[in-house]
Amino acid sequence: MTARPLSAVVMAAGEGTRMKSSRPKPLHVLCGRPMVLHVLDAVAGLKVGRAVVVVGHGAERVTKKLQDEASPSLTIEVVEQRVQRGTGDAVSVALTAFDDDLDDDDLLVLPGDAPLVRSSTLAALVDTHHESDAACTVLTARLDDPTGYGRVIRDKNGYVDRIVEHRDATVDELEVDEINTSIYCFRRSLLAPALRRLSPENAQGEYYLSDVPAVLHDAGYTILACESDDPMESAGVNDRVQLAAVEAELRRRINDRWLRDGVTMLDPAATYIDSTVVLGKDVTLFPGTLLQGATRVGSGAEIGPDTRLVDCAVGAGAVVEKTVGHDAEIGDGAVVGPFASLAPGSSVDPGVRTGPFYTSTPGEDTE
Image 1 (cartoon, rainbow, N blue to C red):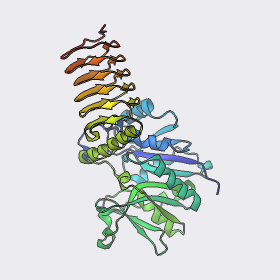
Image 2: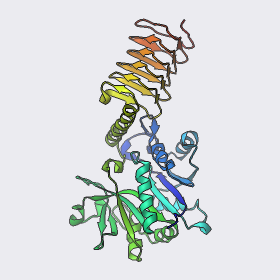
Image 3: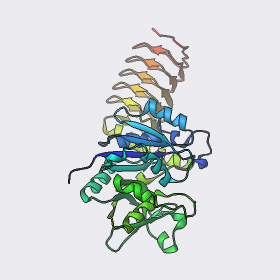
Image 4: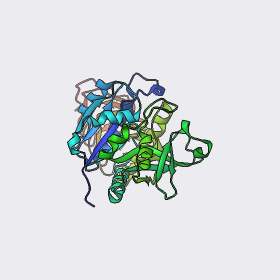
């Protein structure tokens, strides 16, 4: 079957009250990048014609961040859900950005607080949807402890019958270990009329997007499940505890990638690298190293222990030990530290040894 055009909707309108923060939930940072941008980076790995982001709380701040930092390979449009009435309502708002005369396409819908989802998993979901010509395909996962997640209830043929939110589930339904990740692929021509049939008669008094599969199933359409191989990809972020857990997993992935690319870490668990950092071959990172922002490290350099560099450039073969630096430049073969402090705008020339307890001043060059 010829694949239909694919678009995406990312829901990033929630307030995130359990974060207890003045920062909009989608903008909480994980490994140097706002949470919603990790989701959009995964979407950018697919052949997506456009991505519509639904914003709400902190709409101006979220929109500006999207404009400034989203992948240039992805065409992004922003719509605002002025009153938060649930995920079903959020997708209804998103559909206002589409031309109703051109609705023979598929729509990938995912939450803005699922930063661990991979492009490969989204691609598998879309492929399953295309190959089956289903009305909707749901990305699911199986968890040892599915508490808090919506349960996927299948019919006698193994297709998805309905999704029941945890707080609305019966005792028997709570025994189901297959959960809804809140990531879907829909036939857009079928989604809009299904959304109009939703009811807010549930524990939250909201329009649940998770009710759409049941609406479509009852209308005679096929609803499939695509099970994720990695249950961690379903992890959402609703509070600081979950934020820390998700960041730990994302950091592990980042470290694994650099280890495979020729970087040495004496203790990966004590090495912190933002997703925006670039490392050369044969770099060695000692425990307690934090590399953040736009930091770049040249081949053969040694960083740490107990070193934090933010937006710094480190030359090939340099050694930086027990140092804090912000927006500074360290030349090839330079030796910095221990106990050095590099101010923004400062630089250490190639081959220079600063000695211990070195402190630079803004704009200072060493020779």
